[in-house]
Image: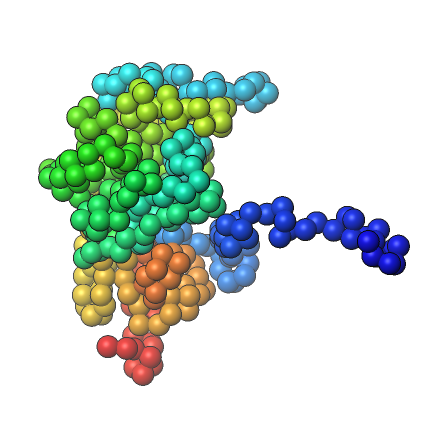
Length: 389
Ligand SMILES: *Cc1c(COP(=O)(O)O)cnc(C)c1O
């Protein structure tokens, strides 16, 4: 006991973080999301901001959602939502020819990532994914105390052989982002089934299809169909990207009834609010014209931006999805700041382990033209000594 009664008094109330916080949490770095648009506009002295940083669908949501939003009554607010998205799972089961029990809906698909990891991993287990992909798989594994084995991309794509080589008895989940955020590459049907054959039910394989509605390629595999043949497949989908419901936070997983029943045990119910459930339901009733229109917008934007990057002789990666990446001849944070002072927000990619690359969401033509004008001017005004060839 401390000799000084006053210091003893205070030490009694001192929180000993080294004792109460697990080592893997102490070592984990906090991720700070960007500031609100209003605050950013004030900081950068601009009166508008084009958000090209989060792969949002600037066209959305589908028109069917508008009525649901305006009909939402204050008297609905005090009532809890349906706890497990009954109606939405019903309509999903019809759309995909599955049982309603094969769906688990979450507060964004980010929430179902956590539920899957909790359901299958215990101390000493690991998950396998890529080093340059959506970071939430890695984050949830690590702050939950599990090892995340990050396999380097090969030619900007997930490397099936290296992932299989990294597997051991303690590997519980393999996360495959198809198509990959941020590179847009995908495994075709043969690559996917070859991988699933080799995994041979030794681990759960999550296929994250957050951007699948943007893909038009014939050889793109459908995770929903694969699970009939491979009982270890879990497919993730979201309403945040194509359906443009990002602010409502709603996404889901689909798997066999047995796997979903396991994951449900770890999933906190009532996490999906009533408005999100209704909006998602309405979004699914669109006849497909909204998806076609969005794909057209994205296609036009790709042509425009890629021709600019060719003209400027910059390296870029443009594949599937409503985004592309370009390597800039200055630091990505400096490029971010230069674009922000002109009202354009992009994603810096150093955090994704692509130092000095930026990722750009693909939106309407007028905004893309403005981006091209501003970005082209910034590149051309750089002192030539800064450009590393
Ligand atoms: C945006 C995104 C998600 C979706 O996250 P939500 O939580 O549903 O908004 C999932 N996976 C990938 C790869 C994404 O880019």
